[in-house]
Length: 156
Image (cartoon, rainbow, N blue to C red; front, side, top):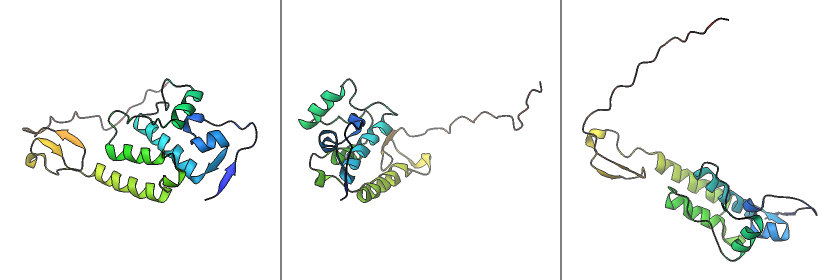
């Protein structure tokens, strides 16, 4: 595991930075994994800044004391579990990027898999593998509006 040290006076984004990197300027693949966990929260929240309402110094204190951000609203449990593993206090306990890649690949396959191919055969309840709740379709959906096939442009 290669390590690099930030030069004196280097500035970096505290809210995305692992504790060992923020406190000791020691950056490793494990500290990158921490940052990736923070990136996952940004993805799930459509770009919300991490640790909302906290200033950098407070983030450092809280993280050192064991605080971890709660699961974002609507975040699947499997994804939040991965985030928590990325934020393990013990650097050695954080997953490797190869492990993260494999888990995300499985997660995405499960998430994208349609629960039912034919709505007429579905029953009300939770769709297995699609992480969604649905109601049985009693009638086909309304037809989509027809759009013009040719676009005309105004000439100036």
